Amino acid sequence: MTNGPLNDVAATTDFTRNPLLAIVVIGASGDLAKRKTYPSLFSLYQRKLLPSHTIVWGYSRSRLTHDSLRKQIRPFLQASISESPQNEELLQSFLNMCFYQRGTGYDDINAYHSMHSSIGIQKKAVEKCLKDREITSSQRHQNHLFYLAIPPNLFHTATQTITQSFATIPQDSLRILFEKPFGRDTESYLHLSNSLSKLPGIHESQMLRIDHYLGKDMIRAIPSLRFNNPWARAIWNRKYISHIVISMKETIGTAGRGGYFDQYGVIRDIIQNHLLQVMTLVAMEEPETTITSNVEGMRDAKCRLLEDVKIPTREDCVVGQYVGYKDDEQVPDESCTPTFAVIKLFVDNERWRGVPFVLLAGKSLEEKSSEIRVVFRSDIGSRNELTIRIQPENEISLTTNVAGNDYGDGMKQETMVLNLKKETEENHMPNADGAYSKLIYDALKGNSSSFVRDDELRLSWEICTPLLHQIEKNRPYPYEIGSRGPPQAQRILDNDDHHHGRSRL
Ligand SMILES: NC(=O)c1ccc[n+]([C@@H]2O[C@H](COP(=O)([O-])OP(=O)(O)OC[C@H]3O[C@@H](n4cnc5c(N)ncnc54)[C@H](OP(=O)(O)O)[C@@H]3O)[C@@H](O)[C@H]2O)c1
Image 1 (cartoon, rainbow, N blue to C red):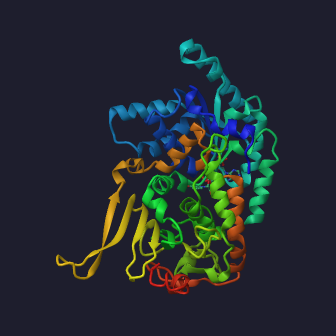
Image 2: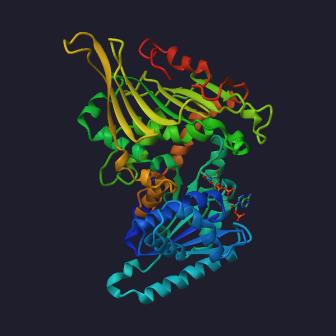
Image 3: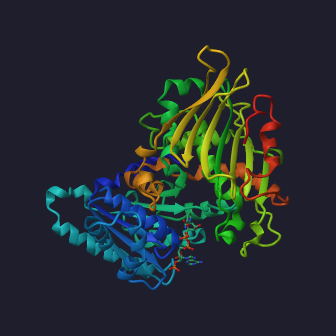
């Protein structure tokens, strides 16, 4: 585990308490920056959640100026607000906070130095204007949040150059956000992880790895649902739960990203990160919340769960590929990359021994949905199910048995639905993904529990890597576009004992 004095300090520093903040988007010319990073920052700005004196610097190799960067990102910000003079003013004031530095590469130390000096000059100008009551001496330093919106092969170079050129910044004032993919298997992840951990001037607690699922409202609500409700505490174990299905289904195929997708496949793209993260929250023991452990309590609990997950075998997995996948020009004709996978996992601990966790993800399926189905044991054949739905609605529902008619004869199943749609921010932000805003805000607040720690990633790769290497040699089952995946997938539940057989994937 990574606890230590610096870890605790760095992880708990609340950047929102200091009026001076510089956010640096590395790879500002790219797709992620335009579609997610800048709109999310704008969303925080609109909600007045950024410190009062925030500046946003973009860095990349493209020949942009402050103005052309602003022009480039404007439509993406505009799309998240309605047209009105007030909103236009808000948008313009946000754009005025955005600046650009061009470099010859991600190792161009002179360009980073130049950006550092410009930030320093801006900071001094702000300080001059600030009255003493607005800024205490302990707040006179400036916090720096770097968002790496670049491919992972540039992480090491960019991080090294940041730490060298911003070396005068105290460690607890500097954090770096990283985006997946984090490796393709245990070996490549360890290579990436070791190369970053060996860098001087940067500590694990300053490195925040984004899994955007951890920014989604319903996923964030899982620990509270489990640990703040006596009914949930009582039934959340193998005595009452038959199996749990965690799924993410898409109706679209590769949507023009076949080249990227084919290198990874659905297990690496969705299951190893998003679905395993959801599983850890669903299955972990209650995090310790003592004074000493609360900083890392959640991530410690997730790691302990991952340590107890049994490594799946080939028998525990069915993979498929939709018919027509190889029509994508970027996909090789002989591709065996799965676009569908279902994996059954078991947790070898007192709470879950014998309960299958079924992780399912696929493209070109019958529906777009993302949900967690907790299926309860039943002796009468007709089960209770608690569903936590992340997509298309934020919803919790309970399927329960009730009397069949007014005379109490027979039995039927009804579903109670708790629709949380209106209470979530995501629905007010069609273009800026609310999940990203929440994660950036967590990073500013010093809440590192919503980010994936190095050991969590290592453990999740250790669970998936043997299977990934085995299936590489096999042809996936074909399935029709718009279907529920290959029919063979159902065997994952049917082959289990009689408690699980009748549930449909
Ligand atoms: N797009 C998304 O929605 C999304 C979602 C989740 C994760 N990600 C991940 O986040 C990272 C960035 O995504 P992206 O879609 O923004 O990627 P991108 O557009 O391909 O790359 C971002 C920027 O990085 C620079 N760059 C790209 N390839 C480079 C290379 N080989 N050498 C040097 N610089 C290079 C380019 O800027 P300059 O040429 O101007 O330097 C580019 O504008 C990727 O790893 C991606 O897998 C993306």
